[in-house]
Image (cartoon, rainbow, N blue to C red):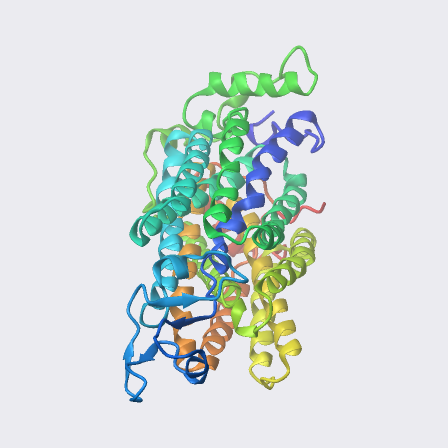
Length: 515
């Protein structure tokens, strides 16, 4: 039995795989809450500048960023920090009223979200390569603990600068956990069940948006909201200590005995008292060149060193960037509709659930490439249609934007399934880290581009529409590949790419195995 076939006869519902998927999917329920938390923690309450004027005069004052100097003059002056008065009937406390992030300091709200996303981007850069060098399990544990500690620290931050620092570090932990969590799950999952597991994990990611809306509705104080969504990661850290290291990584890292030990442990959990039938000889790599691959240290540069790897990385990076940029640009702009942000958040999450499940099922049956490109192109068309909708037709605008956001979320889910399948084991987490870095770069840019709506509200939608359609079309032109199992070395990827180009195969996905 070859390395690639060790789990070939495994059952998704075996005790080990059920426990593994459950434990690694539980933290995914709160990932979206951290990514979108600032919708509520940075909600802008009604405010005005403290003044000695009467209430009637205050109500007639249209500019909330200035105040009259005296009762005898119409001259005004900018409001100073500390002189703001906020209506806290809806939001008990937000970072807006804590640090007066309004008027000339309003840009700091978007800066805080961009700093968080910069942390997520940094996590993709750092933890992907570390996982390929030191293992998936240890990196997952470190990221869970980092998220718990830094998220808790953000709740007690005494200054805006420290708040941004803690959010940056929490973002690093969130991204490091996601890319290695999904990678480790795929490496323990048989080929025929990967799409099913991906559906389940994508549902967990989407369900986090509903959790965020519900928890934020109950907890109106940003300190407690931040704390309530960070402390559970201490519990997730304890649970993840049970998860074994990937046997694929252990073999490629020349730890075959530990790999065999993990496989025997899995067999015992599944009820086989004699342990796994696998032997050390079965864990040897299949090609003669694999031994040299193990002795060399892989770096992110290897993602671009050879033609097939370079093509994979460029196409995936463009897709990840456009999906994330458009998704977060729409998700962070919910207040523009003038409705309850709790209601809009629940609507966004509810619509995404069926979209993500449907897209993952389609990816399994008709192929990953078609699912990703189709979601991007269709979402771009919906945004283009929303530009033609009059401003007074709010329901129609919301419907088009919600559907577009659901499609962008579906594209992200399919990309999470597609990416680890394309990269070899020796560079899988490095590739996941780099493409996630491009995804988070899009999330960093999104809040900054939101600033353009102050000058031209339609300009944001034009950018999103163009970006999604162009990237969707280019990804559709990516070469078709044949069905094959996970590859382990760069040489195998290059051989696969050459064969696919030469034969011009009709099969769309590398792993188009049906459910």
